Length: 398
Image (cartoon, rainbow, N blue to C red):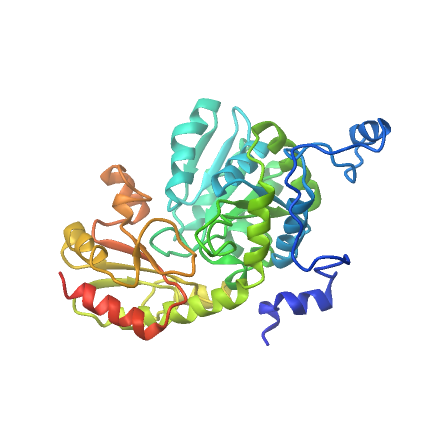
């Protein structure tokens, strides 16, 4: 097996055990807000930095901590912080390292929630965001200044599945750090790829964020986000999380623990289905364009082969006839489900101009590369013959 795609069981052999304790096979749920002290000295020990003392579940929880350790191991990180949603993870990490008067440089094609957080919320805290052309990353040399504290990227992008050269971003940030004698954090949204298909720490990024609602959760039944990094960085993020309050719920953590057991099986099947579906749709006369990194026609296919271990389960198509045709297709599926979100075992379809990028201006849509006829497809684990037949009958309705 490719060493870049070590299974969880193999990682347990080469590193620390995933299940170091005796007792129940399934993870216990510590559904409690607070914890009983042996005596009052426990409170003093916690105040002095003893993290083995549990105090309050907004600070830490045994069920949550267990899942954090497993995800950190999967991502090749030292530590992780679990949150109530992907946006809680993003906003908490950003607010940990960027403060009033400082700046962020980001790639422009982002998840709609992230973009709106950058556009609508951060200016109120006197934090500016500038955008670099991902096809001309030399622009980072101009955009990064002494005020820059964070460089943020998303790859593959939502929903256009464009790629950003992670190694080049990191190299240019390191160059800027030497120039300005300052620390600049690099943070990546790895949700679309997931850690099975892309391992950003191998390219030198500082922080990985994933919406665990998606592929890590995989069953469309939880909201969760996770930040992975070094222990010192995660300690800082968790301190901010105490005050912003986006803490993970223990029952959600338990459901996520359940999902991690089948993560590799699910995502490998989604990769396979997505590749086959993309190949079919690329030849369909009513499909104007197919965006999938695994296709040779994708403009970043060479980069995908370089920095990804698999091409993922997301496919975006642009149908002929604009948004009316996209609506007709999405309303005609029998197997695929017309719903927002992604990464679940069921195939989900959505129209970006009606979902993640709704009510954006024409200029913003152009910057994100989003067109009215786009349909974003989160390919599930169904039988590929059923999926192909479903897309063929739906496209006939145009």
